[in-house]
Length: 211
Image 1 (cartoon, rainbow, N blue to C red):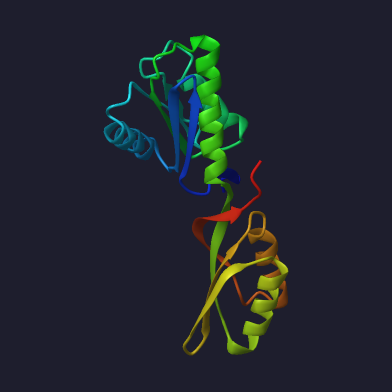
Image 2 (image 1 turned 180 degrees about the vertical axis):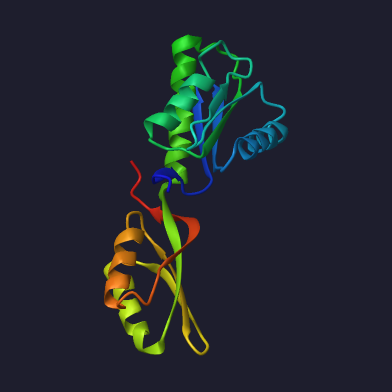
């Protein structure tokens, strides 16, 4: 099972002005490089009259890319990507659009402006903790259902559902580290008559405080 990670809670926007240049930041949570590049494409189309659409993305599989989009090397894409990484976020793409105001900002000014716009947009988006849960299933007798539910409460199971026929089909999600101990407890309390099945993984987005 993959480890938990943090990502933007949703879309986020910001606007920052420095010496008449306007910087518009846009954030979007994404799951793949294709999604990230499609968002970049959309922003470039929407703000096609702007001089620069600087962008960067980072994914929880380790992939990351950035582009200065015509700004001096290292003054746009790098600070935007750095903003994502310093926030401890992943599965995030940020596009910062610049409308040039006629006054040159210099290397340091550009780095500051792009970083500021990216950080503000990321803050506006908020953050969630993506936690991989194990999708579990089992079938028990009606007399055993109460015990199954007590174990679900003990191990913090979520999204519990049951289907009632001649027996009870139960499905639920267990947080990281819960599958093995739940399965052991289940076998012991059912005298070996019940077995917990691993049906795969589902990632849940749990809210966390911005920082």
